[in-house]
Image (cartoon, rainbow, N blue to C red):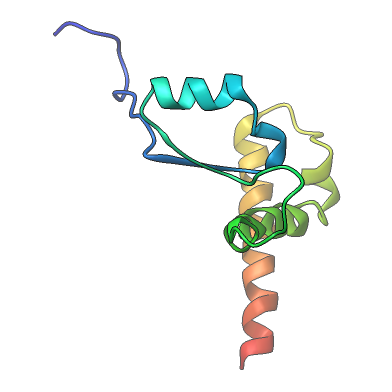
Length: 101
């Protein structure tokens, strides 16, 4: 079989970004690659709806950074780091479910 090993690369359909990426160089590159850009414009009112979609990622990273071993990576081996990441995710889910019942 010919080609590079691994999964084939896929082009994303759209890109969500904040106002810092609203420059001609970025917009032209996205247009060249046929990627739909949803970029907040600079010096405009916040009403694009991007904040609702991006908040989930930022909030999750914030929750993970509450765990010191994940904020600063002490582990050299990736499997140990992944184990601590799994433990942290389990603790976050446990706390969320405690409040739900």
